[in-house]
Amino acid sequence: MIVVMRMDAGKDALEEVVEKAEELGFSPHVIFGKERNVIGLVGVNGKRENVGVIEEMPGVDRIVPISKPYKLASKEVKQETSIVDVAGVKFGGDEVVAIAGPCAVESEEQIVRSAQHVKAAGAKMLRGGAFKPRTSPYSFQGLQEEGLKHLATAREETGLPFCTEVVNPRNVDVVYKYTDMFQVGARNIQNFALLSLLGQTDKPVLLKRGMATTIEEFLMAAEYILCEGNKNVILCERGIRTFETATRNTLDISCVPVVKEKSHLPIIIDPSHSGGHRPYVTALSRAAVAVGADGVIVEVHPEPDNAMSDAAQTISPEHFVKLMGELKAVALSIGRYM
Image 1 (cartoon, rainbow, N blue to C red):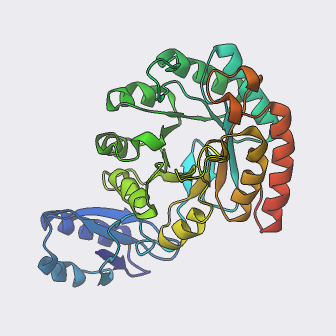
Image 2 (tube, rainbow, N blue to C red):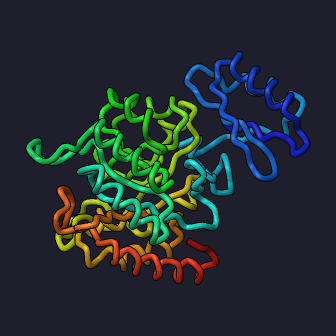
Image 3 (tube, rainbow, N blue to C red):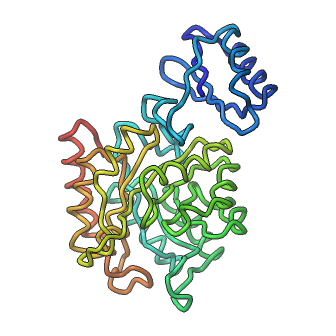
């Protein structure tokens, strides 16, 4: 259920409703809107028959049931797209944001060069994996904390905030020390222990869709983070597994408008993991911006053929410069900018 506050309701009225909701066994979540604020009431201990008490409180307009199983991620809670601020980079507004960098951090020199290249081309954030969940246990697993330190050096050199994947709940604290935004990979979309821990932090989370995850399951995974108190979640469509073998995954381009109809959370697209091959990255990126995605996350490496991870889908800095020029034109054509 959501408590819809009157447009003239002040801070005191909001706090009183929150306090009363907690007394009645609910977990209240305040969602600030452009015109009015609402309070989401979730939790297994709260009893629906008690909400009448809240409805009579000063400042309350009405109480509305939420029909979706994902309560806090639902557009029923908030009509306009949420703006998620990552160290000054804002997702969900008119700007389409580019995140770029190598799949894996290989050395300090490599990640700093990557950051310099992608910043010069117009990227607003750096990406790079320090902990790498690989299909084979014998593949390169990442530099781990050393890689995080290299990412921090790249941030100091260029001013670009970065996102990096956290794989194991045990690593949340160490990744938290360095990153500007956590990334949850496709393999961990239903690692609920990890999602709940990230929900207890105060840093944004980039949540990637799983290889066989429905959109409802995608939003339910986001709910695990939101219900713990962390409202800064960005969704990422990165392709799903189908019978097709020509691409690494099948980009579900329709995921973007569907999510935007159902949820207020911003959503970006990963054209690298979905296509899986360098020649497809440009077309999929253009499609991402055209369909309304709030950003793209692209794998870029100074020497893509020599990348230790995902070389086949990684593009060169020169390719990325050209790509950014095309994406800016697409963004302008739909009333947005990069």
